[in-house]
Image (cartoon, rainbow, N blue to C red; front, side, top):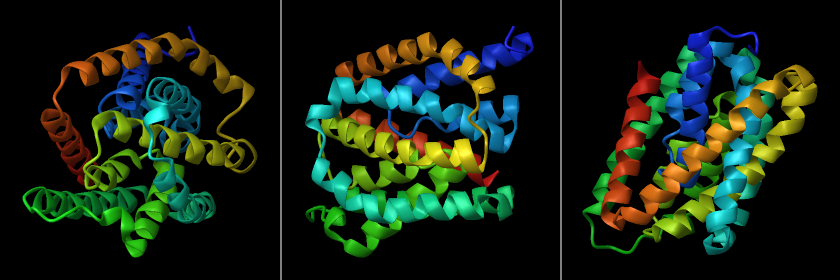
Length: 246
């Protein structure tokens, strides 16, 4: 079935559920899915196969939370994000995978330290008004998303610092990632050739499980407090940092 072994099909199902859960629930929790897909299909190929899955998750999140998004911030992030995606597409094949993951882990750890420090500060959150930081986040998000679908935790740190309501956070992230993921599609089809007619079968198979994950994620968001929602994002980002460093 699907040309995969039983354990690989199980891993694909788990990855699909995680994608839906992370898109409609706990932002930044998709790193385990990235790892599972890489085990099944290999590094580069898995990035292309996973991209349509992420787009489906984005659409579910937009349907549920899109109207509450901070679209102004999304638009301001797009110029550096476009540059990051292009850089990732061009340089992705030349980068040592372990070096990239280690660098991303360091960046996330630094961001987490800053986030914890800011959470203890009573000063107003103004990170979104910092042009240099916005360009840094946009370029790193675009680059890491193109190379490894690993931008979730980075964007989570950025958006957490703005002290938004959880529904606004999810809606903003959904629009940002949907637009960015759409930018990546032509590169995967024509340059990397990781999205083909052959890979469509995996997406079709994963659809109901992405939906299941989204339902779980929406339930969690509905029943969790703002305080614990933010803590869960910090926790998943910390786990992602450690995963990337190992």
